[in-house]
Image (tube, rainbow, N blue to C red; front, top):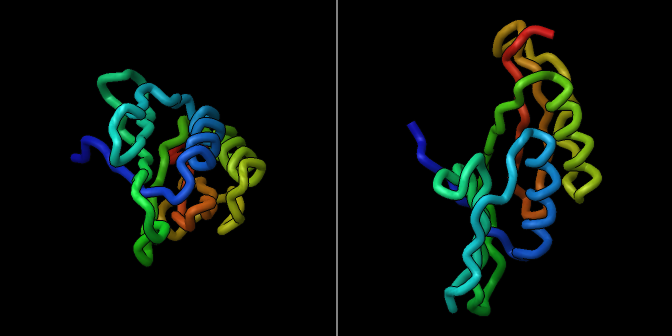
Length: 133
């Protein structure tokens, strides 16, 4: 359904380092970076340079830092529960705050294993595995 999603960040270097670390544990990497435009910089993550599914970007223009919309939530797929655990640990190391440790969320379904963090810009992130242990 979706081709890609993009989040506006306040500090591009900080956010790029954060997402480089946390997405790597899920098997994603920075595959594209746009630095040659005068108005903004951006980094795209995914499996190939032609298919970055997740982007972060920051304006080069002076002004107030972007604020995430209330309820903004991005869930990243994890192939197994160990990846969810690794995402949670990496996110906390990289500057995220805890918003729910790894565990089963049976109210969704019996194998919904997820963790929740808030990134340095205030975006609510989740890593989720739908597979049994």
